[in-house]
Image (cartoon, rainbow over all chains, first blue to last red):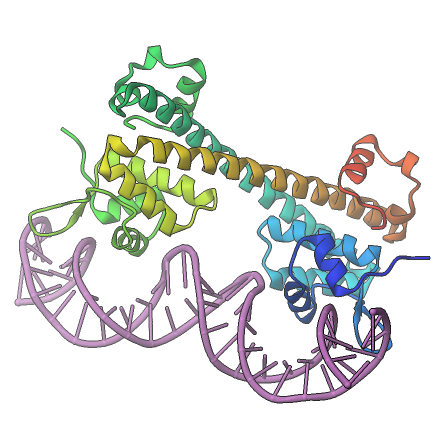
Length: 152
Length: 152
DNA sequence: GCTTGACTTAAACCATAGTTTAAGTTGCAG
DNA sequence: CTGCAACTTAAACTATGGTTTAAGTCAAGC
């Protein structure tokens, strides 16, 4: 009925090496891992979904240790709802902060892209560097103002 | 005329310890660092702006080694415009990819926030877990569809 | 004249997140 | 029978991005 995956299948599905999956399991990032009769790890859709969740947490900058703590709470069941709720709310706030930072970085780099476009066309960085503010494209004006770019 | 900062001032201005600034300089992340007659580092607005740029690159996940390479090219002058342009374009693409990933993570965690709100109110995770798809708030329906959330 | 804040080098140390290696064992498929 | 892919443990190793320490020197301000 339910399709089962070997560690190799799961690795392919998730786009990570099998060694990483073993590492995760050893470090308590995968709850209730099933094994076949001869001891091989078996993954069902729930496991994959769980690991995608773990990937999200990792992407958001949550250290493995904290992910493990969350999983411990998950295993303890409904009595830990309050605490898990706090953790996911905190994590969302952390992601929002990261998004802000990353968007700012994007603007900054975006400006540099424009800068080198202009520099390439004219052959020198002096052109974008010395361009008067009111001759800049509006988008670039906005970025320079927001990112406190004054010189370069 | 131009205000100069000691390493302590610069550290305060940038919100990082002085030891980190020395580490950066030693690793070639600050071009043309001036020194006072007695050998102390001096920072002008250009240096601070440059370091803010370096911070953006770091936020975007660029390793120190590559930042140093970029700076080498910068020092070489206008002959490296083409190569620097390539680097910032690549970096922008990397940031865009990261933003996509992070937004996906945010949606996922956002779903979990809703999940634990519902779980808390009813006292059990079974409530959000077993809620029929068409009874979910539209926002949550969208997230579940997008993030391939089927079970939890 | 002492304290403060700067400076030096080199090496040690830390945490994080894995990867690799060694030296096997096991079971299925061809 | 052979080979492949899985499994085990424990430890070593890698890379990144710093921080800390040692053992000083140096100049300015109070």
